[in-house]
Image (cartoon, rainbow, N blue to C red; front, side):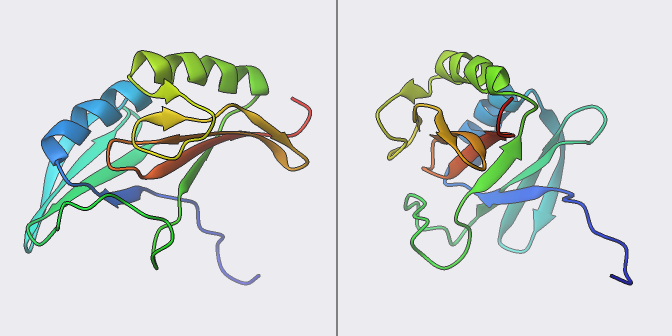
Length: 143
């Protein structure tokens, strides 16, 4: 490869109620609102940790029909984050539950989380935000 390998800079998500989503993402991910990013037809709320290593931008669009997210439509399927070990996934289960994300047999509706699945490629914890956007935490296999 003759070009510099890119690294993920941020994830931007459209939400139905940015004022409700900002505090939820702040409490779940330990980030805080850093600035507004106005754009035509709405506003983005940039959330980040102090080092800007994790940056999430939540967008409100005036034209949003307030429907829940569905990964079957063209566009975003889900966002995956990595953690070092399976024990970290277990700690995240408790943290998510404290943030109102209910443990369930499947993460198939807003504010639910699945059991941890141990797969050949690693272990995964799937959960959904208030708009039903699917988020995942992965740990490497055998950790």
